[in-house]
Image (cartoon, rainbow, N blue to C red; front, side, top):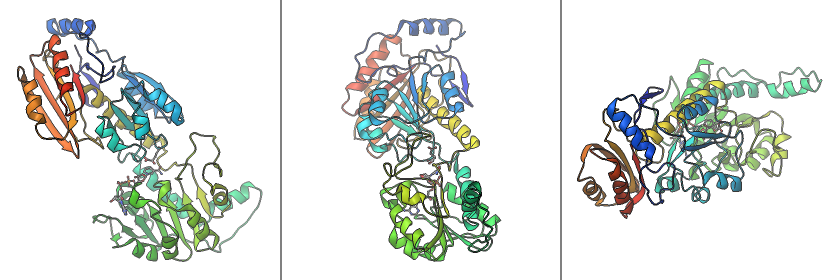
Length: 465
Ligand SMILES: NC(=O)c1ccc[n+]([C@@H]2O[C@H](COP(=O)([O-])OP(=O)(O)OC[C@H]3O[C@@H](n4cnc5c(N)ncnc54)[C@H](O)[C@@H]3O)[C@@H](O)[C@H]2O)c1
Ligand SMILES: O=C(O)CC[C@@H](O)C(=O)O
């Protein structure tokens, strides 16, 4: 029935699923005849065929790297690839049909969109941020979400280092002037970074990398985080954001998009910064109140800023960055010593290639084996793989409401079979159960599936075989 295909180290041995190509609410027919054929071949000789995954539809948006596309195509999935994101109406139209969607930071998978995604089992965010997905709605509807938590962290940190030096030397202004034919050799207001203080807000993966790089350039590093953290090198944690803003020559933001981080840097915080200091934001566009930043730049309070992320970002390359998109865009564009970049913090060949592999592997393992290791909205579980000499085994994945009595009822349904291994865990209101059951003949799969589907606790059932 299946053959072992290496998926970047993971052995793929679970071969088919009972609900993947169909709506979870469909009525059941007999198992496909191809399944029985595979069973016979497997039982007699173990000269196994690759399993049939052509029914699994994947939609990849926002120019997901070739590495990710290749992994998913090698599985035999039907992969549709688009370079940009889609307007909401088109997204809804497409998402109705697919089992897997891969996105980056622009595609908003809100409850309104996900409500239409009746076949969707998993979302891959080919980036760090997952704020663009309604994670709670996804979990409550049995849709796993994966991301790549640190594959582009170094790229962001390196961009920020470049920006610190470029701002201190007004480099982008000088470059633009010379591009326009003007020679303007100045030293006034241009500084070395050695001995200056870098204030890092959010000392996670990116903040850590940055800390090490900045110290290597002779900068003093202070940081503010809501969590008590171990300092890299000789960096120092400060107790409040205010303390950081008052002491830093350069302030750089590396917090996630959360209700608490919305407009975290507004007029009050900008006024607390040192005169002639610099602000860098490569986190999320909502973290800085941009009209307040424009005022602080115009008044000379800030000597410069670098902004990589915006509250509203264009859907694709070539689109306009103007007042229709963000009402202050043209004011922002007119400022001196302001570096504007189109959300490229993580956009390097190294990062995108690594993210493509990491997220596509996670999606593949989830689709084929039900493994949730690395999922951001479901409990993280894995079971040892099924093997080819276990032809009458099935793996049951039962995503359910986290309420009393479910395990007893599920195990009653399994009662006529041997449960070889089972694992279960919960996260908030949602629980995830994996069980490998032996001595299941093909005619019994439908019954198992239907019995689980009929439980009032059910969110989503998958039977992999
Ligand atoms: N510009 C880009 O291309 C790009 C690339 C990658 C990531 N990002 C953004 O950068 C963010 C940070 O990435 P990371 O990998 O370092 O994340 P991380 O989760 O490793 O670190 C975030 C840190 O912020 C801290 N934090 C959370 N809320 C805070 C608050 N209110 N005040 C202070 N600290 C707070 C957390 O405790 C954590 O230590 C991501 O969430 C993403 O939005 C942007
Ligand atoms: O590649 C992207 O679109 C997002 C990059 C970055 O913001 C992330 O969250 O990883």
